[in-house]
Length: 219
Image (cartoon, rainbow, N blue to C red; front, top):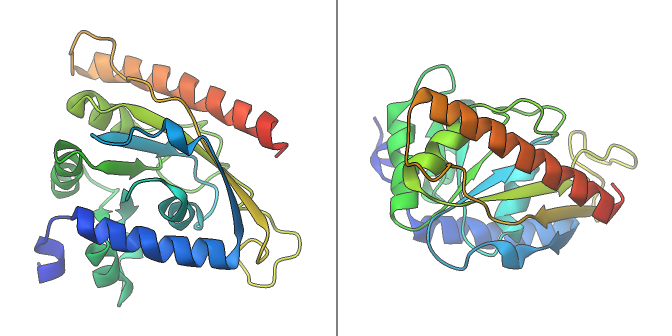
């Protein structure tokens, strides 16, 4: 294990990542941020983000009102990008197993009152929250942190692209934050059944937020 891997994600590192994100996202595109005030100003929070494009994570890092520690697939930690992601407070996760190291670090972020960013669909797809993994429910129920749904719309825009895989430069990307909510049922249960029930509730809230965000933005 390298020194980078051994170091726990820090708030200071995530703040550096946020500043880099602000410069890049506002410099290359035109983010329109709606509802950022809904993110609690302090304390642990889980941001649940739809995922249709590789730009979604950096876009949220540059537009969220607080520094964000994302759970990011280990395949992204290659070459010089790996140490960089560690330094800016991101959490590497092996999606092929129950990655206890990643789980411990993610819970540590929440225990320290930080913001954990999760793509609950697990991988890029249609970005419609149609298929959720149980990881989001686990972190929210285990930590007691509220979930704030986030819809990133426009990142997958293809018309007018100059760079393959990225939306047109200086195009508008909407980032819409929803109302914070609790994932648990108030019982404190952490059983598999409780997590499954929480996942259903979470999916309903995330899907509803995405529909509202699309109506609001016309996307």
